[in-house]
Structure formats: C-alpha cells, structure tokens
Amino acid sequence: MVKELSEQVVVLVGASSGIGRETARQLGEKGATVVLAARNGDALREVADEVRELGGQAHVVVTDVAEWGQVQNLASEAVERFGRIDTWINDAAIAVYATVEGTSVTEFDRVMDVNYMGQVHGIKAALPVMLAQGYGTIINVGSVESYRALPYHGAYTASKHAVKGLTDALRLEMEHEKTGVEVVGIFPASVNTPFFSHARSRLGTKPAPPQPVYTPESVAAAIVSAAARPQRDVYVGGGSKLMRTLEFLSPRLTDRFMRTGGMMFRAQKSGRPDDGRDNFYEPMRDTAGVHGEYEAKSRPSVYTRVFEMTPRWARVAVPALIAGAAGLMFLRRQ
Image (cartoon, rainbow, N blue to C red; front, side):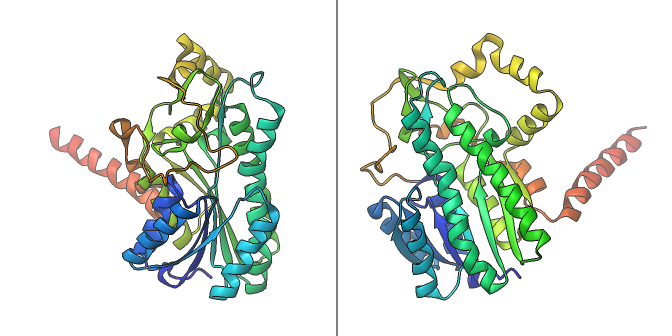
C-alpha cells in the first residue's frame, strides 16, 4: 500500500543541504509531512520553513545518524507526533578524498559509521514501525560508486558498495516474507551539491565532481517519484547507467579507461587550494543550500526522467515509439 504523497509522513535523513534539502522542498510541494533530520539544527529550521511555505508540514529532529540512540529517537518522535512512518529516506553522507594509503583507519571508521551504519540505523529504526503497519517504503541513496570504484575515494566507494548490498538483502527478505515494505536504491552520478566543498581532502586541492555532473533537482525528483511509486533501482543520470553498464561488461577495460592519461585522477581535483574545512565530525557552520560550485557544468537528467521515473510499460513504449517514428521518417525519404 503506497499512499499519495499529500497523505504521507516521510522521514528524511540528510535534509540540511544538497539532495536532501531539495528533496524536502519537492515533498513540500506535494503536500507531504516531512520529518527533517541532520546535525545542523539552524539549516533544518530553514528547510522546515521552506517546506511549509511550499504547502507541506515539517518537523525538525536534530540527529547524527552515526549514533544509534539518536536515530531511534528520530523514529520515535516521528511516530509520536504523526502516528506512522510511510517513507524513510536515508541520504546522509560524508567523504574523505585521499588514497587508501593516505586515509587513516579513524577516517575509514567515520565514513562507514555515517554512510553505511547510518543507513543500517535508519533501516533498523524504521522497520519495526513499518512491519507493524504492514506497509512502508525505505529509500537508500547509494551512488554510481555502489558499482564502480573511483580513485581517491576508497572509503566512500566502500561505504556505497555496502549500501548496495544491504539494500538488496533487505529487499529480498521483505519480498520473501510478503511484508508490504518496499525497498528502493537510488544511484546518482556526480551531482552539483555542497558535498565537494564539505568533504575532507588529502589531495592538496578541494575535490571536484568528475563529468558528467547533474543537478540536485534531478536526484530529488527521482527520490520523490520512488516515494510515490516504489521501484527496485533508479539510476540518476545517463552517466550513472553508462558506468554501471561498462563495469558489467568489462571492469578491466573500465579501469584502463579511467587510468588513461590519469583522466579520473585529474578529474577529481579542482585546482583550488584546500581550505582545511570539512563536515567530518561537526556540521559546517554555514547553512548550505542545495547547489554547489559547479552550476555551469551541471545539467538535468533527461535520461532519468524518461527511462527511470516512468512505469515499466512506458520504458518499453518510449523506445518503441522513437524507433517507430525513426522508421516512418526513413520510409518517407525512400
């Protein structure tokens, strides 16, 4: 059972900036009730005001997803205030840009605590509520790096691989037990958010997103679509789907492509000196918005809207219509 978004209570973790913040806005436009969670209370209160202005309801619960007790409290407060949880979205993440050798054990621990264990905590907090209801949707935000590793990003890549495995295992269990709980994986390519200015860097420069870069609005739209109409996996950006396909066809060739001329190594360095600021253990002091510093390079994902955010019949029908139209044009020229 999936309710209309205007009737849903949605817990959104990682709501203070970037993809999470834009997702909150789009849920507000749909009239949803959104429980906003992140570490930055000031930013969350700004987002809550935006959600209300757009037509939704909002409630703020300051939460560090690495702390199990805080995530338990988040779920409890959502149920106490609104009576249920229809959708739970796991979107919190941090990053350190460094070689594996140059990443400390403590840094690996922290990335896994937030990016992976944060999603474990979200699932474990939401599941009892949803199983008791007999329905619900859990949306885990992974990455193209859930499938394909990038250099300088070993800790983040490992965490997102783990998220993919966790998501698939949970889905199998929920479907086998016929619980009514839907499980969705979202896999974006590079996205123009404050993520890169918030990340820790050992590169000597601020990190940069490798091309192609997509807008946070595209990812948020995919998440909101999945909340309204759950599906197994959603790839955001044709680049994400392409990398998934290349990795499937030939991992070794994909490695070689990334190493050619040091392409993927250079692509992740901005050329600007690192300022030493990051959100690794504490949120940034500013209340960051949705977009990052790469507006000129980012673009919406037509691929995702046409092929990933449509019912299955449409995914077949659209290519068939395109092929049919192309065939008619060819015949007319004969």
